[in-house]
Length: 249
Image (cartoon, one colour):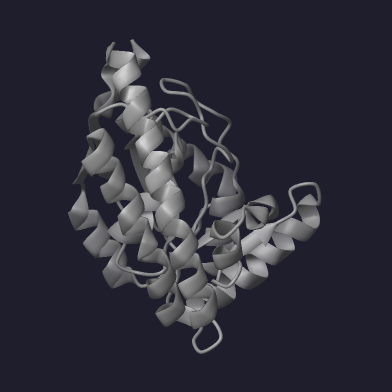
């Protein structure tokens, strides 16, 4: 009975997303004719408030953020490369609302094909890559990442590359730390225990609390990308076991 109740609430939430994203994407696409950069980013990502607050109101998905002092330190540092744990869609929706700077996501270009949502994303300062062309993808990340950070954006890359199931650990790739070292930009690790409420590759939401922990800013001077990523991985995975201990039992 409880699972049926969750299913009905989740279905209502999906309908809420569809009903709100279509008109808002149209507004953003029209707005992109007259504005670009941060103003368009703020206009477009305002829809994400409907998404995460809809998850809260309809499905009971709450969140709590710790380590805000580290976020303030990152803000003072200027540009940073965000390196978060990736368990669900929730963090991709929530981070633009939690961060003080516009975010430049690095993501697979196939997402641009999603009707309305992808079309609006295509108008923003993001880096969409072809994963089948690794050398070309890296050159694009380095070139556009540097340019967007110079405009005041924060680049965000998920080190594991894709969403991982609750209680598991993917392979941490050093693309994010490679960009950070190449540009002299500090990194900010983030642990997110979102899969307890929003499972990987699913819209079957369960009520509960999503914990987000923002780590310390890590300077990159004199560091190697692989070694730096090992430090990021150790902090994130250690923090995940504190945020969601039952998942790692």
